[in-house]
Length: 300
Image 1 (cartoon, one colour):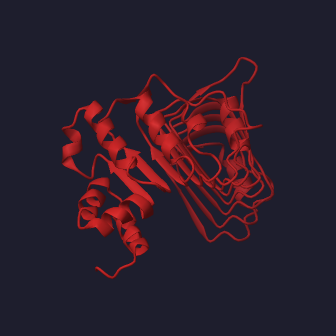
Image 2 (cartoon, helix red, strand yellow):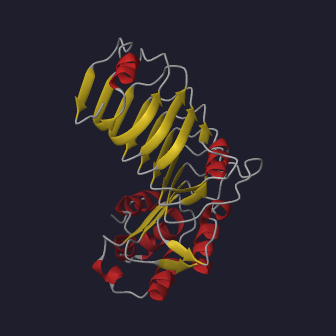
């Protein structure tokens, strides 16, 4: 072990991931401490990793996370998933994001802040490839300058955001391929009765526990569409017939339109689905490449 290059040790520590395990392993010797400081690229704080997290006060937990992050110099993946914490103070959260923004490529964060901060404004946008955000508020998106040129995966869960800001955010991610939306608190303006999203690069969309009057998605490259626990008056997909997988579970929709060109559909999995059967049959009857079809628990 003493002959291992410090870069290799950094990779070993990064594979551990969990902050507690990394700290313990890095105490092995000076070389391992150097690897932690200089070559660690993945760090995770998860309430399920260590029972002691549940016993710490919020302020003590903030100090612990701050001290650990500030001993690294090139974090690429930071995960802070604390299910038992109601909220963090805004100051340390801003400090974590500002300290890592130049190198960070993945951010997973699920704790509210007090006062509320716009994490989109604070995280480094130039290198970020994965953003998984929960229990926060996003507002004031300006796609003209708030660009995420490298972001490929965006997951928003229990987020408060307006339909317009969500549209702007997607526009600001020209390379996004995976989009997950779960239990969003979507604010609609009086002049905007529908939510319209546009992404030429999007390949995989998952929507769960969302209620809207009208949801229009323009995505020329979409291959996977999954809807779960949703209530929609209208869902319309505008694309070029690239859809391969359609999965619908416990969804009520009056009008579903996935386009006339459905010949590339390979898998259709539908359960507890309320829709007019004749309309649905018309859509899937043109799927000449269909190899998997499951329909159960539906209401027509």
